[in-house]
Image (cartoon, rainbow, N blue to C red; front, side, top):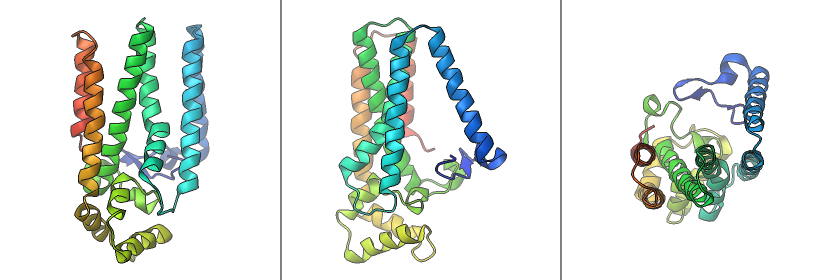
Length: 240
């Protein structure tokens, strides 16, 4: 939230708005060190290695995103790379950690990691859709915020493949202005929907949730598996 200069988080004022950037950064550092202290108490190099690798991946993702802010020439592979580093890697690490903590076999930990990665990819793609299609009262943050912040996400990438020169100029105007003052958000949404950007992204997200369900099928029936299946269904159908 500090990096993104976010004002809200799930419909409530973000920590940096309530307490300021300085306190928020320090609180984040403290929580992060608490997490490492817990990991260290387990005397597990596997857990520490996983957390360190995850941190490196997510920082790389943030730096890549900063490099691409304001650019209209973002490709589908570019978008997928960012999602992999910023979201899917986090989901994968969390599900792997659950397997490690539960004493799962190496094979099962790997399967859980793959499940989490696919779930994370789907989660972010649905998030990118909702940034265009949801309402602020439901989403908990302003809609159209990604483009306003200079981020070209997959629904827009797909739409731009079919866009006219005038439509592309409209998008460039929003990127340059950092606002919808000269080009209304409704104009952008109409373009994205009209060129199939929303539907194509939804289909892509469903591919990842289908793969996640397939990976879960390798595990025996249990309350834990049902919970993960429910989480997958939630990601596929969520509206916030």
